[in-house]
Amino acid sequence: MRDRSEQDLLPLIAIARPRMLHCAITPELVYERFVRRATEAALKRTAHPDSEIIKALEEGTFSFKDFGPLELSIPTLTIDTTNGYNPNIERVLEFINKP
Image 1 (cartoon, rainbow, N blue to C red):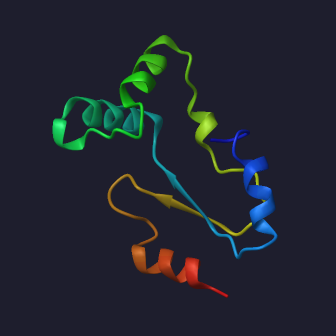
Image 2: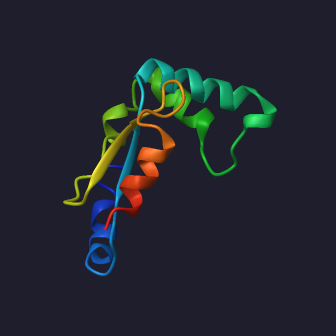
């Protein structure tokens, strides 16, 4: 999440060839996906607190701005995941593997 991860990642930037992939969709679709994952047994994720996020969204104590791209000076590609991947997976792989 923004403003929480940048400081932890800075030391790694100096020793790696980092690339940031930022997946983006509308807040409405994010909410819909959280609800779906929280209510469908096959989609439940133990590593993610979907039910807690849904509650915070409904209470207005959660903001999607916390999930914008991290503020790091590294190559970044935004991927629209509304319906598949845009750009497509081949373009994503090309971005990742670019020297």
